[in-house]
Length: 288
Image 1 (cartoon, rainbow, N blue to C red):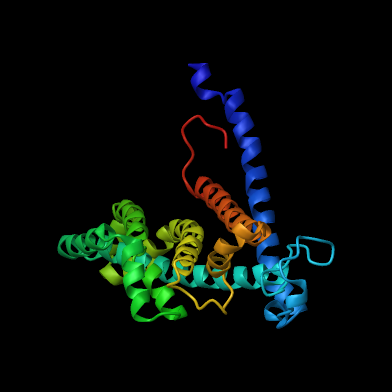
Image 2 (spheres, rainbow, N blue to C red):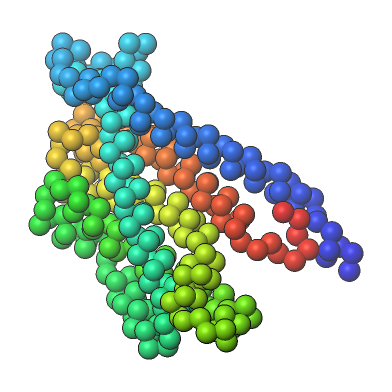
């Protein structure tokens, strides 16, 4: 009996490593965001300056990430591309999270008929192939930043809605919510005062989890030539341009944009996992 109540060595080690994971993920993400925000500000407009005399130069002390086929500094171009990709990702994740949060809480509060209707809508949206739908939407508005945001945001809210709905339904059965109904509160007052605050934590986790997903979608669309125009740097357009450069030996044109893409994804996923553990209830007998 005692062994089931006391934390094991593995539990203690896990408890020590989790703050380290959160700190490491936060530090890496701050460094990536700082690179994306500050570097273009320090050299405004320099990311698209062409100098064919230094085309395809390998990484050096002067050009840390090397130069591309037009002699543009990749350190600056990757920073600008990362800035655009992160902007798209934040917009997509925010729209999806807000919409999913509203749908999930309304489904939990509005009654069985609305719950069934909204969840069938979520199932129908979730059944659509997201990338194919994104390609179709963007194909009608090529090069449009708004179309890219809409194509990603409008296909990723069902997961958020279902997650929020489960939390809201649990909260809806609580005694203090029943007491609010007995005191004369309306469904919308309960939704605003109790369900939304209870689901807000899961909404934050969903927002963070959607960020890398949105970055990959934007990068994929731009890589396929359906996203932003080639003259507008993003991680996807940089990767698309670097496809042909690999055969010339300019490996750095692919390596650094891909490395920043993977690094951003891993740091965001680590942060989201740490937030989820902090916002989730602890297991019985487990030391957090």
